[in-house]
Image (cartoon, rainbow, N blue to C red; front, side):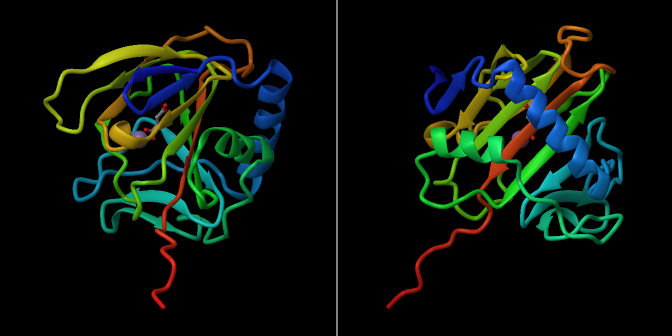
Length: 209
Ligand code: SIN
Ligand code: MN
């Protein structure tokens, strides 16, 4: 495992090819009940270039009216989200020192033209919990900066089977996906990249005595 910047841990090739295929099969099942949807920016309603879905008790959604938020139901179907795949939970157990389980597993699908602008993950209550990310399919160029938008950034590649964790000083670092390297992986027959991010949403602070 490499520490690319303090708090950003990268484990290349964490998932074997067979495990990557299992996870893709799990996600194919998941999208039968929780189809990919196109989120929209708060206020402007501009569409994201990625499509998304979620697994777990909570899912991250965004639209013009309600903005960024977590909710227990799919924004189009109103159904509860499917369960988080076991291999994704294993990654959380292997990497995260946090004492509670993740509540959300955001699934982003990038086609060759999709990208994600620099942003912070800050819709969760307890930033002591890390964000654990799994990459499947085409390689991407991932960008990481500091906790201020204007801080210097650096980029590195995330490949199919890699796991990464944003924790400690990198938990609130600005990050994004600059581009997808089309046809760099054979995992997804139609190409593209899937990214799963596991997040603990509620603080689960013990009730005071
Ligand atoms: C995200 O920040 O939500 C996704 C990051 C990634 O696709 O690697
Ligand atoms: Mn993010």
